[in-house]
Amino acid sequence: MEARAAARAIDALRRGWPIRIAGADGALTLLPIEGATRESLAAFDPAGQAPLLLSGARGVTLKLVNQREAGDPLAPVLIARERWTDTPAAAMAIADPVSDLANPFKGPFRAQPLPQTDAAGAALELARLAGLLPAYFVGADDASVEAACTVADIAAFGDATQLEIAARARLPVEAKVDAEIVAFRSTQDPREHVALILGERDGSPPVVRLHSECLTGDVLGSLKCDCGPQLHSALHEIAEAQWGVLLYLRQEGRGIGLINKLRAYQLQDQGFDTVDANVRLGFAIDARDFGVAARMLDLLGVRAVRLLTNNPAKVAGLEAEGITVIERLPHALPSNPHNERYLATKRDRTGHQL
Image (cartoon, rainbow, N blue to C red; front, side):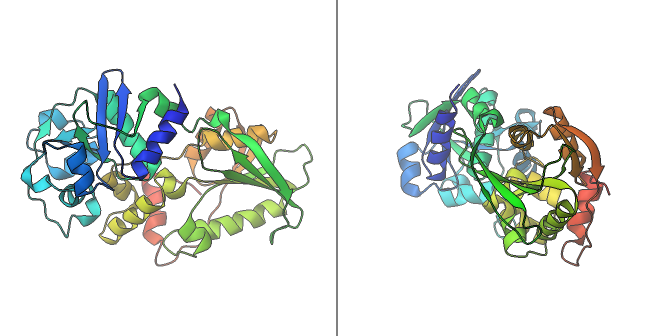
């Protein structure tokens, strides 16, 4: 397995180029629907017969005629190419749930058998890593591609054990002038994570906060979530302890990326809650990898923490990687009219506790 092969495939997908993924049960030649043009599709599929590979959740929405081939909503789905899915724009309307109200389905859509389930599932995961919708045209085996990888390559991409400390510096911040920032880099993943250490280490377990990147909340002051206030409140709570660490994880939108997060926002404006919006897009409810946080703590020499969180998944994620959570410290902030439903969804559907 070679994570570099997966990285090259991700780069190709982001450029709208075709790739090939090989798995235990065969290979698939794929062109991402997002980014495809008439010219690139014609070059990839001159016969105009390439079916569409979509997430199982999307297949449920499409109400596939022959459900036997698409009975599992968690499995990838292959649908036949029809005249109403014949252009990149038409295929994008099928792939993107945000456009459902503007583009009523023309169907019916026919599911086809998909023997290469291993490669297909990895393809959907690779789309998430690239920040794209999980949707492809599936071409002939001999179609020309720009990059190729295996299912094992994709599994190796982002391997947290490859993360290392790249740089560190003193960084006085508003919450506490006695602070140090530490940057982490991996050869497997271009995302660079950082830790902010506040106060002087004294051998006691630090107060630790895992904060996932949120451009809209952290930087722009979005009222749709509580990320910005949580970040700043956490810094002050850590500063009031003897010492602590804030881990800033580059996992925007619970791991689905900025653009897909904005798509989820659009679905929320249509009436879906946070959970249903992510699932409707074809993603997991929470795709973050807390193994990254555990590796960062390990590199900092921290093996036991007092974790500042309302999310039991963070506790479980750290403990699964060998970090002892000796205490969970609740982290509650007031709601506002724009994020009341968001906070209720976290409480009622993803198990967040106070």
